[in-house]
Amino acid sequence: MKNLFSLSLLFLAVSVCAQTPVKTPTKTRILIIFDASGSMTTPIEKSTRIQVAKKMANKLIDSLASFKNVEIALRVYGHQKTADLKDCKDSRLEVPFAPNNIVIMKKKVNSLVPKGWTPIAYSLQECEKDFPAEKGVRNLVIIITDGLEECTGDPCAISQALQKKGIFLKPFIIGLGSSEQFKLKFDCAGTYYDANTEKEMETVVGVVVSQAMNATSCQINLLDKQLRPVETNVLMTIYDAATKKLLYNFEHTMNGRAVPDTLFLDPLRKYDITVHTMPPVEVKNVELIVGKHNVVPIDVPQGNIAFNCTGKTNYSDLKAIITQHGKHKTINVQTFNTTKRYITGAYDLEILTVPRLYYDSLVVSQNETSNITIPQPGRLQINKSRDLVCAIYRIQNGKMEWVADVSDAFYQTIIMQPGKYIVAGRSKSETRTIYTFEKEFTITSANTTEINI
Image 1 (cartoon, rainbow, N blue to C red):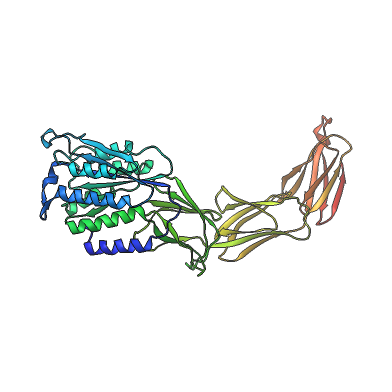
Image 2: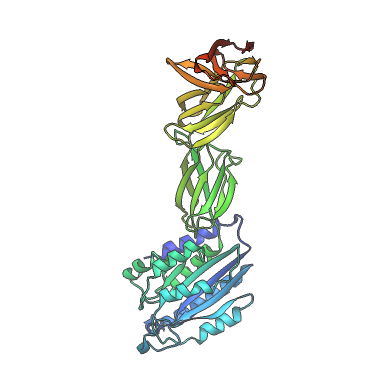
């Protein structure tokens, strides 16, 4: 149960901490779901729950009206049929979203007379139709109630399903005359607050409005092996954890004090964050605490892989395929004579030379560079006097391995790594296998080897 003193501190902290917004939608829509069931006639202090709820709703409406680009609407339940009828569909959108509807909203709130049952789940389900279909709008729900669900349906399940669909963000639920059991029942549906007195009501309204309309500060610390927040200069993609919608792309930056720069994010969402290192690092369901500066640590220790060729390479665009050791998915194709950062660990490399060069379990260590240097290639000049079916091979571990095909052209040049090779085949017109030929040759760095076949 929220303590009044802690709520007051929270309200002040949010007001101070969340002054600067991140890129925000151009419009916010807030639906107030108001409980006008029969139990709202119950006395509370020197008044009744319905009177306290009306004061709270009016204060919310006035506070929200002070913000630009905000539209509000009112859905009411339990106000049309008496309790003896047990009407589980007694819920209605009384004031739809529209600009400048404050007077209508307050007039409707003040006219409400408690009568019926408490169909919270049904009201939540119906409110999906209350929000106009418009992209780029931030939709919120504030529920003011004094009772638990009296009909079929699960408010928690419906709330979570609608959040996942992107209908609205995590709702605020304000409970009047509630108990600990009441809080436990509603915590899964949204962020819950008690307002059992008029003084608590005023504090809760301040907190809800501040959370609804302000961003919360945070910094994302990209940690090295020693857990120091020194990694930077990498793109971060931030998604809504419920809807999986891409929200923001931020290039991680150190500020003027050499610490990760501050972001301001909506505290009503949970976030999935992808850091686009090699390979990418993901964290799920990041939740921000309102009223404090949040620090989100992500382990991304990195080192370097550098590819070089001795002397002058004759390869026009030599590349290397890089995979994590033991995995098959390519994470990068790196060009030679470049250096690239990778998450620390072991990698398998396939260098696209002729023949291919392979390196297994190359270890990348924190802030160190793993250098891969290959010898300068040579050049093979093939001159053919007839049409042949043939290819180039090398003997590795006592076995013949294919290296490259010889083309149909009578003159062919192949850039190759130094070593001993065999060209083998036969004339295309030859019908006898016994006339297969073999010819050995050697490739040396920076030299041309010519063979006539």
